[in-house]
Image 1 (spheres, chains in turn blue, cyan):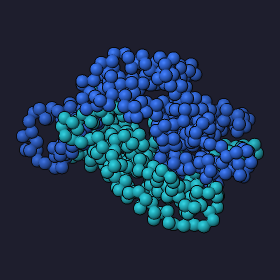
Image 2: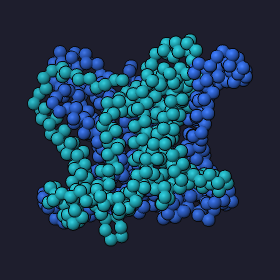
Image 3: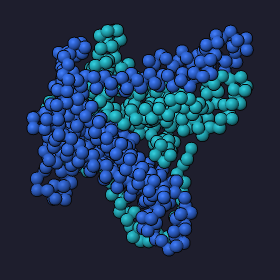
Length: 334
Length: 289
């Protein structure tokens, strides 16, 4: 795959590198025509090929194997795996059976995790972006520091949080129990009910700088005259934020919320690094759930069926979201 | 390259605003920086200290964890794996993105819109959706052709290069759009082919964008966990997976884990902070368009 780019580069760069006109006349007509009409396609070809190999083909392949009974036994000869028809899907959605029940549970956990994390991240990002809009001493430094969670490799940051949430040696219990005396015992954060909240906190920490970053850029596009006019009319800072800043940020917000939603809903890193392959029941996110059924239980067929269901859900949510927000936008314009 | 301009405030702010700003920004700074402080301070503690109750201020400082991390696990080996995989993925991803972005930016052809939408939307799909089939495809390619993709660095490189590709194409196309077409037209008049114009005129003019895209591609690959955990074996393991080995059955060497985390984070954080200005403008270009 990677070999496709360089060879094309050589002949094409030829004329550019100062070859004579005679050399160009010898070029077959087909190549010449390809150079004219087909060039954009040639330019795109390598990218299209890798996308096909890594994204598009696996997607269709995934749909195919979701209809098969693909277990460890058939991994090396997936062709010979027996057809399952809709069995994998039926098992996945039978909510009174253990598998369906677990999937549904995992879905609700993921949904609440996502909604919480996205709304808090958005809130923090908005607050930070607005509060850092005006110039004051130290603003540049704060902006840079706020981006640190975005820059740190996910697993390094997540391991650190895991350390902080350790029951005996962690900072969280030290502060809550030893220093503030808020809790009577040193609680467990990585197992039980608390694990869900620990995961939300970490997710917010990781996600909000993205909202901050995008909103900061969005704020740049609001014309200053708007604020000046509003100030002239006697609007205070708070009113300006409510009447000018927030409405102007709507298009940016629509993108941020959608992107954060999709990222968080598909989040694998956070539970995987914090809890390993067997997360606590309360923190059983859907991507880990699918990972388990595929790579721990070696049932690819059912794992794929769950993936396809997840994809369908996300497609529907995205479509509805885009419809609703774009309608809101056009109404606003009128 | 748009930068964050300093907008003088239109009017004097009331006390309530200033106080809100102080309080909120202080809390946020604490939230952001406490884990970084924990990482740094714990990496300088002895094992005995990290195994006791947490101390904000270390009793004594030691650099021993930074020496031990290389012995406890084959960290250097994982580091080399990560560097090879991430650098290759970055180079190929950016190269492919330059060609594709040039096509999208300079030509109007059938399927242009379909291409951009399809490529961008692949980024939205759950990674787990690709992982299972891709794993099987790699295993099957290995069985039928002998090209080992599963468990090899090559497989991981090909996979990673597609992660940043859509965004890189999108961002670079935007960059190329901002470079006047007259420039490459002039180059073509002077006898350059389209690709000559690309490499002699457009690419040099887009260096900041290419740098930003490269850093983004590198960061994406450097922090990836899911595919690394499935598609590597003992000899090709990357840092993302290897770091977990500081946890043995009896002990977790937390001071070494933190020291290793610092070492692993340094390349990307340094790169990010150095190129922050370009990155921020580039990463957000999409959101404000």
